[in-house]
Amino acid sequence: MTSSVLVLGAGMVGTCTALHLAMRGHAVALVDRCEPGRETSYGNAGILQREAVAPYAFPRSIPKLLGVALKRGADVNYHLGALPGVAGGLARYWRNSGAAHYPAIAGAYARLIEHATGEHAPLIAAAGAGDLVRREGYLHLFRDHAGLDLALAEARALAQSHGLRHAALDAGALAAAEPALRQRLPGAIHWLDPWSVSDPGELVARYAAHFQRLGGRLVRGDAASLRQSPAGWMVNTADGPLEAEHAVIALGPWADLLLRPLGYRLPLFVKRGYHRHYAGAAGPKLPLYDVGRGLVLAPMRRGVRLTTGAEFARRDAPATPWQLGRAEASARELLDLPEPVEAQPWMGARPCTADMKPVIGPAPRHRGLWFNFGHAHQGFTLGPVSGRLLTELIDGETPLVDPAPYAAQRFER
Image (cartoon, rainbow, N blue to C red; front, side, top):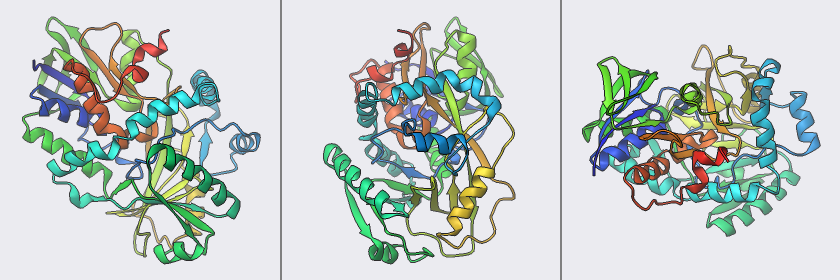
């Protein structure tokens, strides 16, 4: 039986949730303060990471932790004043990254990731977005032979256990594959299953346009105004109050702003990140992940997009893009990067949970309220499968993936 649904948040996750609901005949309003795909989903490296079966664990080696504490690299930064606010979540993140918990977490994570490109494919076709997508994988670059050899052993194990495809490139093969590289590196791993997107925000916008063609409503509104009503849930919008039987919170890094007034205290925190485009010179053919330096260089419509690692800071704290400056210095060792396109770097926030898994399913204590957030680095990758999973739960169907590992109730035990 179809019903009316408010979906709050028009990033990749929220837009795909609204699209799946509309495909099944529900009356859906997708509510956001911005146009679809203009915030967190806009700023990523544009890779649909089918190979990312293992979520990012908290570093556990002493040298790595010391490097983070002393801010020696470009992959991690932190604001000292923000650490008390995230300390509890980071402590649980550390614990869940250990051998006692991580294997089960990775197993649940992999069961979503294995559907990543398969669930994007029909949406890409229906939205007419094939021109944005390349199905040729991406490269992990290594600056030392020891790191390459260790990563190759890990890649072989992952490929065998999860049905992934990869190729090892030596120095010569890498130089031939990526002639824009300015130095001869020891080699790379070419992950063959991921897809890359030349404009991440535009892909979300195309999905949203398809949603509208199916009869869905795209509405400017204030998610913070969500409240219960006689019919279910109500939110204030530019078109006036909207009411529906169900409401889906898909607000990414802003989810906790809505959850706390409703009485939920989930272990959520954000990792901020930066990017900038550079144009005017030959760029890479495929996205390049410089493993040792923690940066990605991706060919985009606007030029080569350089993305950083993680910054632990208050969500709305002023930008501190020194991390991008370090990444840029490292990137210039690899590629010719002329003047940047943007006057200032873009900054956004990734929505994270303490156990590295997204929160997908019904709210434990509110009828008709649903959660779909906490995808960390992979909301862009997991939007379609998460949207389908939640839609199947709303419809009372047998879901594509066992939803138990992603239920909010796991944090209330």
